[in-house]
Length: 469
Ligand code: 5AD
Ligand code: SF4
Image (cartoon, rainbow, N blue to C red; front, side, top):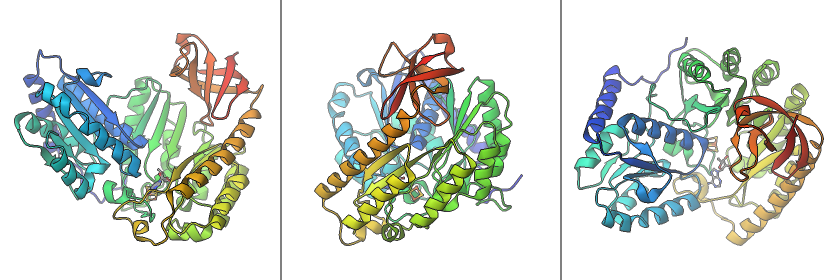
């Protein structure tokens, strides 16, 4: 298979990681220490937290959902929008008293926010009681850094500017027993003008197909039925290899893994979604009929300013082609309102696209100015009240469409992969259709992990309710 241009982590370093894990294990033996991880942001971050949890479990820590009884509190941060950053500052600040009461408490902060030098500097100054700070590129060094933090009175800080290495074989503790995430590529090369991700997650690096397939075979052996392939832009998977390799090829291989019944992926950039990928999705047995295809704006002028690389016409053509090949597909999206210079006319174009495409659902965001991105320096930043009004209008339009689409499911019979008890209703079980719709229904515990047939009796805006048949 193809070679990656980036260098693999050395065997010595993997060995070193194991040794640090063993050292800590020895150090904390018999003390029943507990950890609590607070995760902000996207699936990538949630998956990184699964790796942190995996390393901590190997060290002998156990998880607690109660922050008050934790001996180690880790914040895995996101910097895509400003409000998540403010929440981190508030929550870290609130731990000052805990640290006074329990000087042995270790507080760590990692993730995307820490990759911004000014933010990590601010944290070390403003919250000197924080023990450990590290970024996104050195997650695998966590055991070493934790050991240092246990020994040091000062904040241990390691934030690397350079990415480049893909670390395999980090222990992972996955929370869900039925569906699993696996990262297929790291970083992003797109530099959409509003987005901080390329600056904090680095350039695109794809994992080797063989490593991904090994992991998915392993997941199937462990009983997982569904796998979600993660990357900021999975459609450019393999472009960094010396020899061409495409995401569609990878999907075709994963489709053949025995035991895996459903394959999902996210996120797809419209400019890189190839005809062959649509074909691979249509032909495959296991790839779910769902595509998350962020449009961000419906205005050609704004799309250009955003550096998205497609027009509303290109996008509509793509949607038509996908629906032609996969008639049952559910399409979801991300939309930003209030990008600098967005006029009422531009916003009307966004609403118009939402009406034309008729998304099953949409994640809608207020534009957030991110220092270091080109859009942050653009003139005509939009007033916060106007942004809020536009968001509300957009959510109303999308809510109406989502409800209309879900209403059509009334009395239909859908295939649901049962994930477990509903988080909101303890008399209900929950699972998803291939179209990624959440369905709640009464069932037995032994249905978990199976695909069952459910008749939809009560469609709602964001979920469906039904009866198992
Ligand atoms: N402001 C608001 N939303 C943003 N996103 C990315 N950057 C910003 C920003 N600066 C949104 C995009 C992306 C999603 C993950 O977050 O819609 O697809
Ligand atoms: Fe950000 Fe654009 Fe990359 Fe998505 S594709 S992570 S929005 S730069």
